[in-house]
Length: 199
Picture 1 (cartoon, helix red, strand yellow):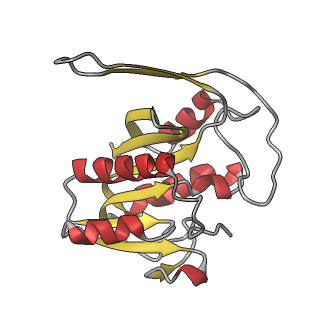
Picture 2: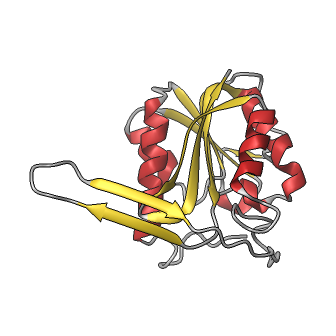
């Protein structure tokens, strides 16, 4: 299991991902949220400060989440939550479980979901900021197919051999979700976000 509380875990790049998680959740204007994968609990606590009810779910009992369960079989009725956040979780399951997990997330979501996944490979980033003008950001990932080797954590990552982005997008669409937006976080190019809406 991941140690979420060592100093190097919450570096600047990860805080950028936290910001994107919170920002994308807020766009749903939800009354309640399910957080799949509690992590260090920061997102849950922040949402509570914004008076957004949320429940955390995790398979790791040591994290003291509200519900101990797998994303593959969540003990909730259909459309229980306005939005689901599942950040850096699904890569911890074998890829053959990816579509099954998406279907279960879709089942309990009323409006949609925010999912982030690791995206392997180098990134080219360009930032231009001129006085009195909005900044211009540009990022693209350089294809660098490499065979994935399981080392006890990630079973797969976007960009690795056999896991191109188009395959992940196709499987998301197979689940019945519409991809409203997807992007790599500029400050943390290892994290690829997908904003999903129910059709």
